[in-house]
Length: 184
Image (cartoon, rainbow, N blue to C red):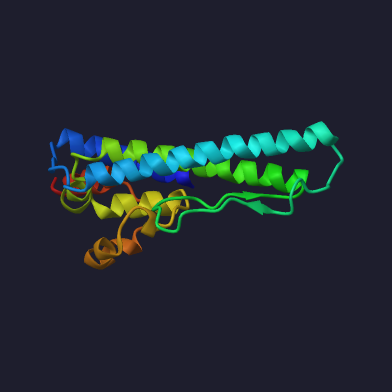
């Protein structure tokens, strides 16, 4: 699902670049980027600590389920923004699952940071609202089973209620072509 949404967003970005839809970078962009990079750094540090924790289980024996420490949690500064809670599970299987979930979160965070950087000077909503036929987007979402709310914000859905009745097989060029033939 996320790959489909990323595909749609990259296509929308290409349209916005082609149409030269630019915006100024917001004042808080740098601060937010620093915060996101710090969160990613914390996740990567936690990932390494979890790998060491996993290795300690493997050193004791692969079937051992004795806890190294009973769900050891690292104390965090409550005022630190973006800090993640570090939990070290007490079994080998739980540690592997935690590592897998954290790896997915790290990949998502990296993708979000890259998308944010790519979109910092591009006005994506301008192309969605003014240049792309919403019926094409609705048909694409229906055809590939992507929730329309993943690509259109609520405010856009309210502007185009008529587009929500579009069939998944809708093709813009066919409508244009058939209307052209009716002229003769």
